[in-house]
Length: 397
Image 1 (cartoon, helix red, strand yellow):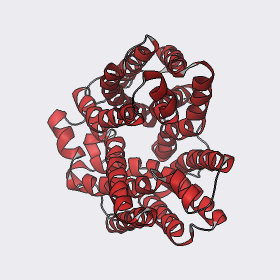
Image 2: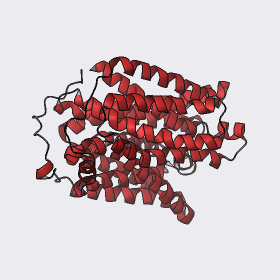
Image 3: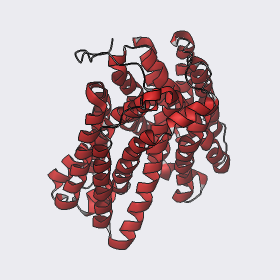
């Protein structure tokens, strides 16, 4: 069990590192390719588009396939497409490839979560999900800075070579340790769609969309906030960003425990924590210590709700769980896009305070929706088997 969870964590760590690598090397890639930074930024948008749309589509198409085969195929395609920049591919072809990379990333997330929860007792499902999801949180704290260092030392294409080698290593180990995981006798393809997109599921998905929109409305402009409002400069900015990554990793791992103890309650508490932190940034952000603590709290709480959110969506989807497993990642990317757009428009209208106000309002609405949806349960016709009473919260072995 530990080996399987470990390789699934490694897979999301590698995929998450490839995703954020571009953000850490925008200037290096722009200079080498002789294109504007905004042109390189299209790689970020392409990846997000692939996850948001392609991930659920691929999950739907492969819903009846064994999860082991899906995992191996997704990692193989991901590794092969990331070889393009290593071989000298231009920006246009890499942008097109990033759409497909994002799509197989979304597929890998869904298949990994389904596999992880199938090998642990139901009372530990949240912690198994957290292991998979935490790979993305750790990638921001580890993958991006290491990729940046390698890019500065040898060139940005070498950073993607490291991704390819790591992906090949994960694929090899997965071939050896990941068991067959049939999807069982759940709903057919149309049944998956009906259950996964039922109103009760969409209501909980809306919580994450609003919450991550609020987070992104603020974090897209985090460095300008630290410089222009909090008065944090130089190497302190880098330390703050690293601290944010560490806080996100801690929150992501811890979210699994809270999901097992009560996903609906954990989602409300995490949303309140994000909203309160954004309000603190808005009202007292000019005090450096408060600003830094608020930024760390945003990372901790935002990452902490990912597993309870995932757990709640899958539980409400009933027999549509295979397709539903891909929806939080898709909805989270939609929220990021909405937040970045809303924050940009707010800055144009009223500067950084307006962006922070927009972020806080979105998060406050997310809290209200989380509270309103706390009593939603699966429909009687699709209610899953009763879960056993939660056992004491011990580590997943």
